[in-house]
Length: 369
Image (cartoon, rainbow, N blue to C red; front, side, top):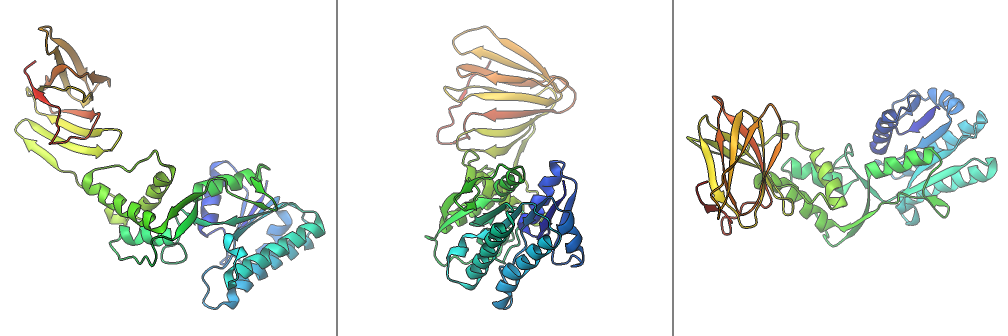
């Protein structure tokens, strides 16, 4: 199957081409503004499906709206007619096609042209009026507020928010691409004459900005955003894609003493805290118990023993652990416990606690095992 993608180097086009290749659609005809125009004829002759994503949304002159969004669409359809190619055509439009502005008018003109083409030829057409699209590879400081905010905040640059109460409807690039692949396979999501991405997120501009700033601050707090919220998860992925190349990493505070070190790695509001414990040879840590807080220990390097004693009993339970055999040991409440390094090298343990440490309510009580 030969798939023609116009605007293949653009935001949606680049993501779509990458995913088509992931799904083993290997015969992709990529056409962009830098492509030799003479190739358009061959591509239109051979294509079994057309994704028409090329367009103009930030021109130097207003006349370029009509030239890019109507003119090239006309050229594309005329070329398909020339070669009597009746393959399906998908076109990227915008919700602004309903508005009375130069960009909206040019998009509406392109839509009308494609509907006329369908009536004339009987070709299946799929027109998507996309709202704001966000995700990786979108050009910042161009026509996307989300891309601009993510880029600028990640790069310590100022942003301008004229009205934080403005409500935005957004679709995520992976949801867009998934819908387009569905359309290719004849499973498009239709709503009347138009097609649409079924997953739309509605949120104010101010809330978006607050979230992005919280992502930046999360490094300092060693926290992770609420990944159970679909929009937050998608926006966080988008933000990370705009990190400067020299700022992918960040340091953690290691609490070091003669026993080794303890370092908080990740904190969450509802999924607890992950820390890294490094224990020197022959050293024992712990000897405390909890009412409600529970933990999981995973030794990933070295050898040791984890000991337990129910606080009202004398019996000591021992679990021998090693980085050679990864196993998780649960630390139940009501049991005082410790961990001892039995090796001659540092023992490294990943520790999960059911709640982030709160110095005001530590729920930690000293008691020798």
